[in-house]
Image (cartoon, rainbow, N blue to C red; front, side, top):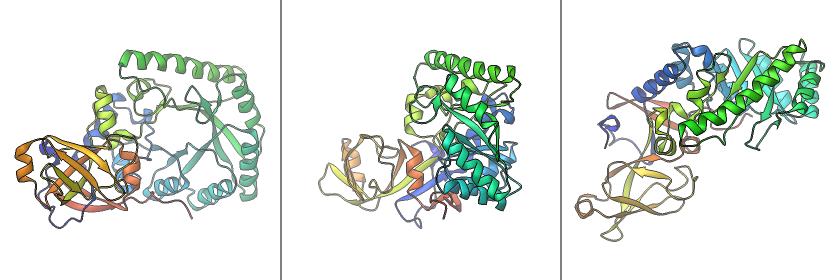
Length: 370
């Protein structure tokens, strides 16, 4: 196992437990800055992966002052952590519009923005802001090929942006484009897709500005295309997974240069057969997507992950020496394939620095607002 994951004092830790490795988190943040030309103004990291104020404060400490989130609870956590600029990359609908107004009133020191792709939702948000005596900054959410959210990046989006400038209670401030489908392993292929997307988004901005309509902000991308967008001086890049990273991106996109910083501590709870060991690590403790390999065992050579249920995960031990050495109670370290849903399954994470547990961090934004 990589020596960076050595933990000397695990006997008192319950299992399954989530471990955050502080030195690796810091190194991943430094790597993000390096990819951004050491210009933190180009960064707007997403907090969806870690959901913890402590990591936000580590980013603030190195000059990263702009953040992105998906939920109102994440936005609240960011404000409580001292983040001055928060983009909620989610359209406010129903009572969420009023909840955003309340959050803005509660935290006037933080500038909140959200995204819209529908005129009705925009009008409702504007009305909620008027009732609260506030003005909300909004960005158009563009669908640039993922077909999940957003309005088509064509004249319809321009018409919506023009309409936003006339809605009381709203201020249009730019364009948001998330190309989550752009995750080609080949860097050149990934970058060519970014070229095409960025040309469309810049063209829309230029059209608006040619009409005298300000659209100063371009917020783009996730973790896979991050190295490309981070080099664009007129773009705020918004990676999320990078700070903890995971097995999927580590194996699939090695060019990113990040290291998994979150590992699960499990233990053997049964040896039903000489070639099998059962862990206390079911899919209630590790992200259930993707189907198939949901993690990689770090400290058991030859281990193959087999059947998993809610609280159990069976290993097949292909290495005969491991069959003899792995006992009931033995610790097993697993790197999750998908860290984002894994973190959300845990109330807290143990911080490991210098090989010892130094703190327990609450996953503060894992729940919903209210």
